[in-house]
Length: 225
Image (cartoon, rainbow, N blue to C red; front, side, top):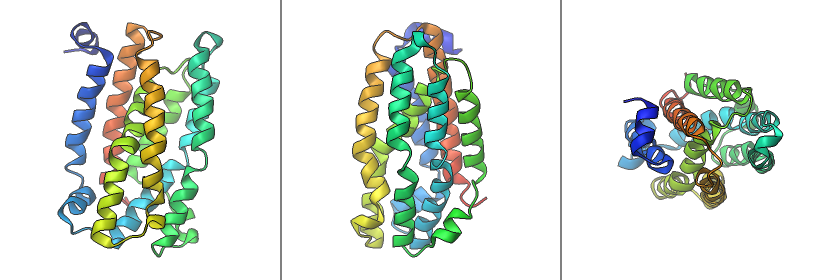
């Protein structure tokens, strides 16, 4: 079944919900998250996760800004939302750096790191897509990334604290994104249901969500590679 065929029988939120279910299935097979769930995760696992996330999070605000600059005046609402979102996101990597140091890492090793295979693919896709004229499909990327913050970050933070005895200042990045991304998803949901998007736009949103969901899970699977 093609994206267009699916659009005939399901609304955009329903189609995105199906993508989210697929993401959950991929996350359930990620080794570090399996260890987290089982209670066998280590402090080294947590440092590795922060190390790998930081390399990709640094790119977040730049690709959002680039997307905003490529929306024309007919897409003013999306341009405005992207610019505002980029401003809110551009310091996020600093929270990861503070958490990393708080659990025994050093800034020198963290800042000397590079993206893993999944992060390279994810960032490359995001920047390439953001260069398109009116890159509306990136709403699908935001659905995945902001959804992870709103729906999973606090759960992961609580579990890391439970298993490893971490303090709040050692999981600040994840804790912060529970609330911040919940607000972002609310703003995005308003756009997705506003009637601003054509059927073609909706197809692009779903396709982008599918790609980003797979690449984000790959990023977590390929820690340090």
